[in-house]
Length: 193
Image 1 (cartoon, rainbow, N blue to C red):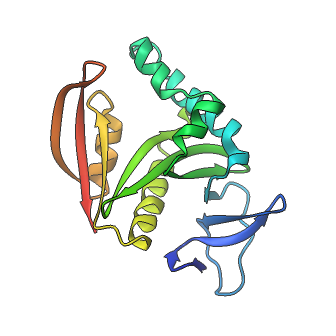
Image 2: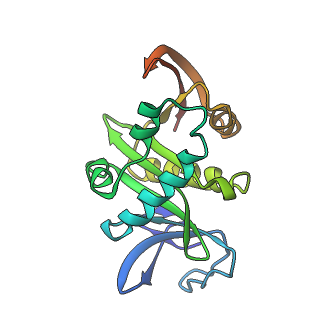
């Protein structure tokens, strides 16, 4: 896999006349970027052009939780394009795409030598396909590239699948805030780099 700015697995390729950072789950020879085969999972850094697609992704992700989430919580997780623009302030977002369709995303917010992961979401039709793992690994690589000492995330306790993912990726559970967000418990996971 090529390397851009020392970030393993992140390569620059042209896409619709713009340069984007990509990580393909395919083997490339140094200096010869490969065109991903059909069905290959790509991770690329988002731009403002991607805002409508990511707003639609978050709608698909959290609509699947509609019956169990309080309406005010659901509203806070599903931004319209203008709201997502403000989410991008000081946050670097990466999206996973398969066959051109955005199927997952995560944000990286770096402050004080630490990287906080925000807004991790995977399209319900593509869960259990290593999309979340690939996104988190790309975020950890981004954090290392930016000389972070740790990566952390807060996860609502009701999202057991997310907790299992972070434990699988060697994050340590390091705390719980009870009734913290809209009266919901929040669990904290951290990985030291």
